[in-house]
Image (cartoon, rainbow, N blue to C red):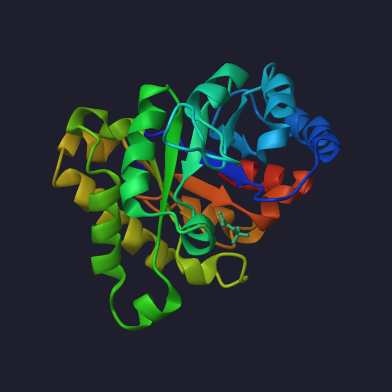
Length: 250
Ligand code: PGA
């Protein structure tokens, strides 16, 4: 890996109440080293404030799992960038495959959301990745190319390095079926190449994570690949011991 600081992000999805968040952090935060990889906790919206307060004295940061692109307005059930900013949240996951699949998140909306997040000082963690059908029919490269081009279309080249990309093959999410280190490295190197075609400087600096069934047992090997700058962890991040072991492995 070049001199990019790795990121280990915990995507809790729709898990943990505020009380469970407090319990997790009480156990997990003392295990977070003061230096080394960046650690990001992404709890549900309702736990963000608690998480920010608990993480304040630690090396860990907090990100949301989604946000709306408008600052306010008649969008029932949505949350905006200024609302996240006010809480002291540092970043936001955008375009997770579950949001694309179940909530019709479109590349057009994502292109707007990435820019809004950057403008609000929220580090976007943009998720891209192919389905099993797409992989098996040889469409992985075309799909990743299309997603990266569309979702980052509005970001000027000199701001690309402020985005974090998470390569998450949909067939590896929550399935226990991890991409091989070769598959992860190949896809992430491809994504870095796409960024390089816009800016060599951005390609050298941008952090690209792997996500999909990352566990304490496979984290070290995945994260040691030259282009893999960390991991976005779902299931295994719900357990403080497991997530601490993943952080330690990186
Ligand atoms: P998983 O989820 O680690 O449970 O596979 C990863 C993700 O969806 O971000």
